[in-house]
Image (cartoon, rainbow, N blue to C red):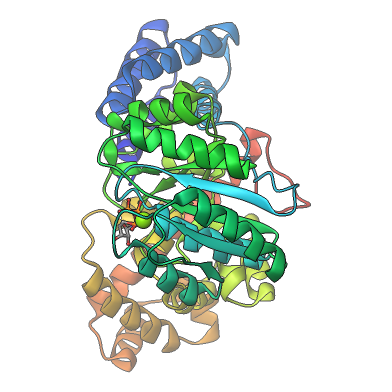
Length: 444
Ligand SMILES: Nc1nc2c(ncn2[C@@H]2O[C@H](COP(=O)(O)OP(=O)(O)OP(=O)(O)O)[C@@H](O)[C@H]2O)c(=O)[nH]1
Ligand SMILES: [Mg+2]
């Protein structure tokens, strides 16, 4: 969803890198472009202004202009500020009571019920025993919806059909949690089109009864500028502990994510990246910043892969990316795993340069293309997979014939692979430059 912002920032970086000498005035020009890009992405104007001011101060303070690689230095400053803007470090959940309650709140359709299920699934995988509570008594189908979601993720749901008093439901649910031995209780509450007094009153009463460790605001990333107001209102009313940014997979411009933390001072704890109940990830500011700046988010990808694919294969990939030894065989393995991993956009978008590759891509066609790519790599000899440089015209003809496609398609595939390989190499260098390279952990 940060595609537009990402594209613009990468253009600015490209210009910065290309400059042999950098002067005050072309730094100012670049920063103006960064500011425009932020504003166009719906970042709150005050936040954008402060961001630029911060970067400018640091750029001057560090005498960047005299340094050997001024462009790179400025890029690093922008990267670090972006991480800051997104909240510095990942904030986990505070779950130290037994049971610990999590209250989900948010506007109508912001993704509370879906996030309740996703969170339940996530916590189960963390070894917790969650219980979901249907505390939306207004929309007739709300309880059934949560019930279905709970069944899908294998998490018990407390439903009291016909009960209209949220406080009674909550009290009964807590008793039920004890019987079940559940240690996290997640309350799915009602939404409103707009935040209003009766809703706030109800949420406050519920909060005072269950004393939640976490009050998480489900916030639709597509709400743009308005998201910041919504978040501020909920925060003032309930003193939220963080947010779940939902629908990050959509075509929203991303301003909400970039402004939220600064404006409310509360962290984004999770991101929802699709309608499916596994499309959910802990929000890591640093990884998100790298994703926005087009450096890809290989760590999240590797984590996701590790969840679905076997751990060893994921570690092998991590190692190869780190060493810049990504070959066509790895590319093929990735293609196969990608197809196991769910929506292609999510996966490719996490790859370095993937966001760019996705732009204007027709995915149903891409799916077919992936099958072709797989067939092409299968038609190669091991040597050709390791060293595509050896592919002369006659080898290319043979491979294309073997895969039942044209040589042009083979050439396209090799181009794509080449780009990906380049990006991965660059990413390795970029991380070293950032000084965040941790060989013990592999990436970042
Ligand atoms: N693409 C995408 N869709 C999502 C995501 N999260 C939720 N949705 C969809 O958004 C719609 C509303 O989600 P719900 O979870 O019902 O939202 P809610 O806040 O519980 O809505 P109310 O209970 O009516 O206030 C559903 O169609 C979900 O499938 C997400 O991360 N990505
Ligand atoms: Mg709901």
